[in-house]
Image (tube, rainbow, N blue to C red; front, side, top):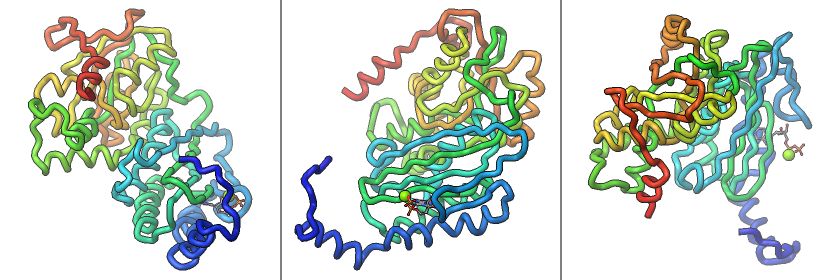
Length: 354
Ligand code: ADP
Ligand code: MG
């Protein structure tokens, strides 16, 4: 809620806030220094691509000579993209993972990121695990935290990530060609199944014990960005994107931007291990139109099948061929016998949220 009433220095609200800040909360400066700045001076300090990290008005980057910069931002808002009581370590991981996933989908190599953080309070019990989860993933991909902004307000986390790619090799959405195979990395739908568990959707259809729900929920709270696969697909794949809003909708962006249609083998879509045990109707719906998967959907020439499989093996990432790019006709779904299937995703969703 936006409160536009002016807060004067002697108002009760101001005094209460000041007391809270002085007694329970760290100053903004201490907070940045303690939880985020050490990264710039340790991990990033060793990286010649980082000219200057946290602490000045701007960071300075030295991209490798001849490289293009790939840049993307993703904002995660409490109550909309994650539960307000989400585990802070997993949340730290997730908010960088979804940004790295965009770099992966472009075939870009991580370079650095900034963090804009709005926090209701500077609570060390939240900040310590949040920064640990965030920076562990950053270290894994040698992606240095180089700056950001910190303000008091509703919990909101916005990351901008910078990556490098040789000019001409980016995996763009407008590059699919008629005759391409369509592929997807990893498995789909377990994150959406976990959400159904929290919301108690389809109680008659979904059967999942607590252990299975926890397993599926890890896919939702701790996604794995497919950075290595994205790099291995440079020069092999034509078009690519990462799946955040469900395969059907996201693949639709490739079709629209490339001016083509597609046929998908509905029952070839790789379901997550927990989803694989569910009824066919749920399996089909959640692999096709789940969300929060952060897998890569890409197209590649049929002549490069062996190279795609080798790229999957080299990056230790499963890849599954799920369809083909056609001249036109939108997105058509076929069952295992090659018969057309129609799934009304919209009406199913409306039905479930009714
Ligand atoms: P300014 O007044 O120029 O906005 P700030 O006082 O907000 O600077 O920030 C000081 C330094 O700390 C800057 O280098 C900024 O990039 C960095 N910084 C601020 N917040 C964060 C954060 N959440 N994570 C990483 N670096 C941050
Ligand atoms: Mg600032």
